[in-house]
Amino acid sequence: MANTPADEIHKNENLSNFNNQELNHFFKMMKDKKSDIEIIEELKIKLIPFYHELAIKNVKDDEVEFKYLKNN
Image 1 (cartoon, rainbow, N blue to C red):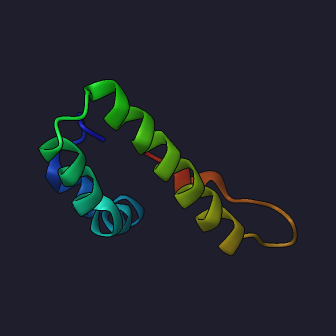
Image 2: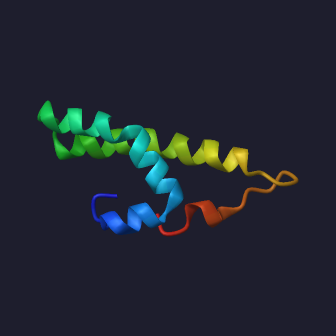
């Protein structure tokens, strides 16, 4: 996400929702001078369940549509 331009995040509804939910948490980590590695690992920890839950909510006949992972 760090390499994703802000306007691309806003165009992607899923990334925008994730950003709105988690942004303060990551700003706090930066303020607390956490290392880039710690922030990236925390991002993975938060982002994977976010998309997993999104996929579960959008299951149709036991099939997950991978379009929700597009551009990420």
